[in-house]
Image 1 (cartoon, rainbow, N blue to C red):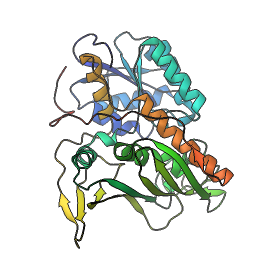
Image 2 (cartoon, rainbow, N blue to C red):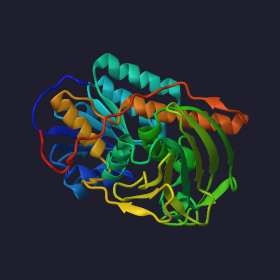
Image 3 (cartoon, rainbow, N blue to C red):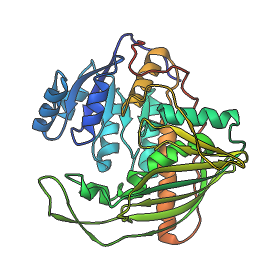
Length: 371
């Protein structure tokens, strides 16, 4: 919980005008509780182009952004290797921070961010915020209600040929902080934590289809780059609340299978929506049943940036936001333990824990003005 401060719309500044900023800027400009006032980037021309495209009134350097008194939350959309540096600078300037995933690249840096934010009385949140969308909120309520009985096990699958097939600059997705485990894993871990709580240990294996990839789209199509991480990871997880999950994350599969999350309980099996999306319905098979039964998830998806809305409302109302630094840090801890298990061929413990995140109230809508 944070102390309520100020009134009116919350001033937002964006750092990083790359590919993902297109979704954030389009969405945040449509959320009336947010006022996007500045876009910053190392390439000021790219910042200017993004600001002009999405109707943001100002753009420039990171230093210019951090010097502004009318910006309260920095939305950090830089490359993973820069997340901590930019977040620390923002906290030092007295601003709250929303980090794109990963929260950090190592636990020490993550803990440093947490301590800095706590010491300054500032909020720092972390993507993904897809678990706040209607599908996963409905999944959480169904499990809490006992609709599937006691949750026992889960299966998670993400497999594609890899982002080099579509991303114009995919190199960073195959370096430290990337790969399918670090790039896509956060969506699945964050969602499953809503059902099973914290991960306690993991056993994993990893592989790669080769050390070189070729860019398949955009102005750099045909260029090659080196791969520095495992591009296939399969793992088994134990959870604090007693569940067990099996997961596969792959950039090596010609056949794409994404968004597969099935949760088996004592009374039913539930197929949850894609944790990387903000829409999608739920399917359930009761014990003894033969066919999936659809369950419509009601609510407004909103898209990337709804976690920033939740943080902004928490600032104004003195409440606790949901995509917390503790959640981001635990999800990082679980992925780092998975990577260690791949390297060491051992079960690896996950020492951090995260408190249960309260569901959103019924009718929560990021497109309504509340502050």
